[in-house]
Image (tube, rainbow, N blue to C red; front, side, top):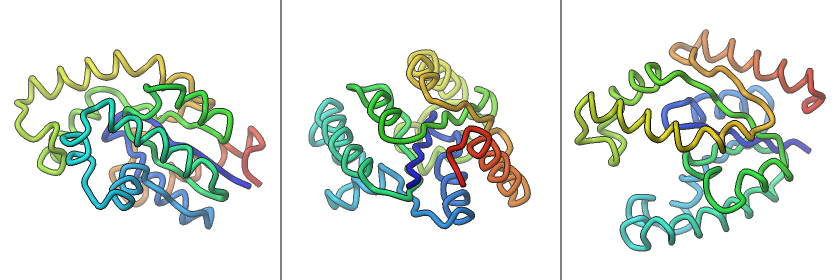
Length: 180
């Protein structure tokens, strides 16, 4: 039984690496935000607007526990998921947690080109975007670093880099007897 949680800031590659790793390992891939949206038939932004952050975080916590019961799965948690309630403790108890560690400048570059797809970032200037990333990482690192594994996810820009990252992640987990 394999259950791996990928955690990290938005733009760290949780979905990109998670999908590729799941394919390579013949596992199911679940993006927690997409799972929430499918269950509620609303976007995360709409749930946030309707219930506020605390209401959304309750929903997120409940559905994290639901997907945390699945087997043979790679789960990409939302960027804030590990930072609320006892979510990081829960993920560490029921599976393997991997923090996708990416430097601020790389996150900035990735998020700058994807701003239109991310409502929280869409109207930010470059300076505001860098400030948002820096501030959020400062608050979230104490949670992210509780993951069992820390993985450098800076090289996910091409198919070759993604394939190499999948192999590195496989080796990391095999070395620690988490994969067969």
